[in-house]
Image (cartoon, rainbow, N blue to C red; front, side, top):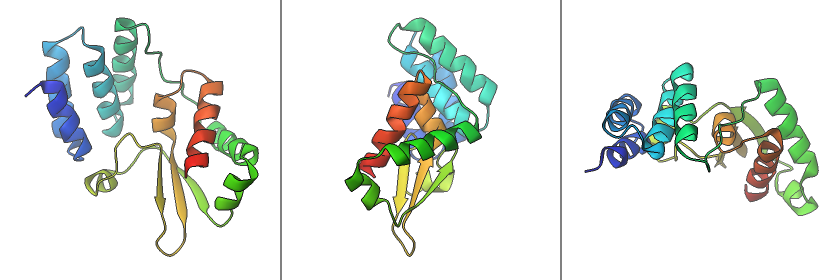
Length: 161
């Protein structure tokens, strides 16, 4: 089995440390594979290796012209962008979220991933008791190359929730 594929499977199972080892091995074996580096970057972020994650994202971006670096903002700025996005929603989307508690979490918890949530999911909605929509900041940033693209992605995620 391909190491990148195996690392991705482990990542999606919530076996982050095993996924990290497999992704590192994939990058060692194929140092010019941008997908291996992007996966290593995402897994590294999940295990708290921020500097290693940033380095892996830089390596992936250097290997392909279509993959810009993630755009990072402070938690406070992300909250501001989220508030702006909520205000910018179309009326029908705003009505769907009226009684929903919207909160921000950096990334999905390992337990959530092990329960079946995609580790790269932009949001998670739980409708047990109180309706809660969790917006994952890092997963949004990983898909955004600028503040404008981040803002657009947040609006899109809220509209789909």
